[in-house]
Image (tube, rainbow, N blue to C red):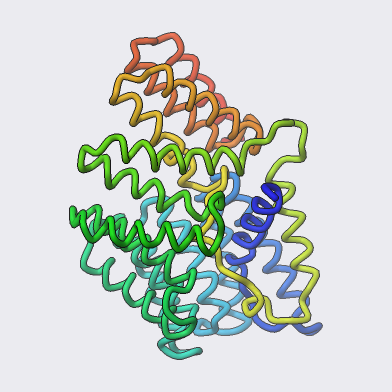
Length: 362
């Protein structure tokens, strides 16, 4: 079941980035060109090479605009992808422009209240939150919720996820009562919809932990942090490192879907890009740092070190020894060892991270 969750989530996330229009024999050449660029951008994404992903995404956009026009939904799909890459690189202004353009295309093609616009509004909310533009973020999240509610009814899984994002926003605004109500309701609803061990829970659980930590309620914070850590560990720990690496499993799932072109791809896909966190996810190293950093502040060094060691093993087992997310985890470990007064271990972790980045340049 764990392997299925990894495959489904990662495969569907990858495919959510490559929504295209109806396939026909006459379009075969352009689709193969697009497949080459889109798969290349996704390979770059999963390997944390975001600059390369942006370049290949722009190549894909150029092909689509020439073939279908700049206001086609296919262009909007790639614009959202590009905005995501820019957001990861903290280029929030560029991301905002692309999200707004995609939103305009989807609204023109499908109307104001379609589910594609709901996804873009949610992504825009995250982008505004990262810039601490809280008023615009709240408006974006509420727009997304209203559209999901109109299309799927009250308390749909999609609306629940957006509500959890809104709860995290309230936490950042120090509206703690509103944040707790929204996040607690979202966690309960997600458990009912997806089960107690689904990776969809990781983000809202950590947000709950951060909420309680901000209020100096450390016992409650630890409870949620440990729950989220247990889900991550349970879904992404691989006992046998010889198991085929995650990126190859993802590619296999994508290849299967690309072979099924009888239906428009964008109509068949479920967008789980904001619902799923895997070891390859850009947020993963930061998420794995939350619980040990919490223990470090409490001078619980042994527990923090154990979490770091487990985190590194999970990343190595899933991604291999040269993935940039492994380097980020090693950086976090180096900082931890410096604070512990263990300069030799800190230097060792930093050197391993440096070697990974050096290999990445070639």
